[in-house]
Figure (cartoon, rainbow, N blue to C red):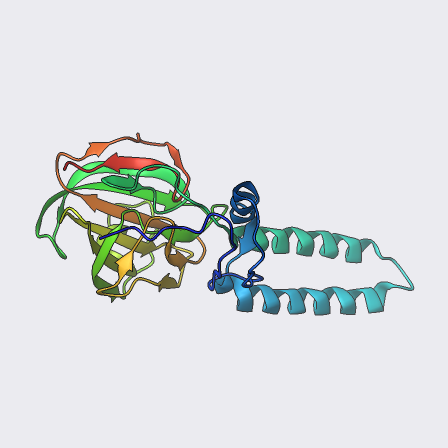
Length: 260
């Protein structure tokens, strides 16, 4: 499978994001790179951000109306809290556009921003039914919650499972929580399983992967709302390049190298 070349001097249409438009103006490669690095807001946050803004505006407007001729201190307090809460929501739904600068062949990149919480051999009984090396990334509420494809290849399987909402860092979350499973076959014929897991706060998993479609590093695999985890299952003997507790940057941190 050949990797699709990226245009060096033109902007692209990135449909999952707010405020991105098609542009045919030729720019320098450096300007194109800077544009890709700009922070956007993910479309998965549209409804929540709009509804939250309307509620907070209404709340603060009503409070100001009734307090404007007396004591405005309570209004200032509520306004400050509202601004902080909305700022947290904006931070959560930010969506950086990233390009991986290395060689994608045999490379496994972090599927999410977060922290490594598990590196161990486990029994994977949903798809492989054998032992695999599991690397797990926990995303706190302050992390970007977009998920990237960790490898390039063809999507073989996509399955969504309903389940519980245990805290995402617990071992049982991988098999008991609501989750989506994506299996990717690399160009070398190696199957990699990626599992999006909802946490105690997260109640919705969005998966963009579709069976029988090509997938690439740099592309979004999905999105999980409000605190969650992503597990990647690798063949035993894979060279792991991260350690426990290490912070990861989605689509940038190389977490492992596959044996060829």
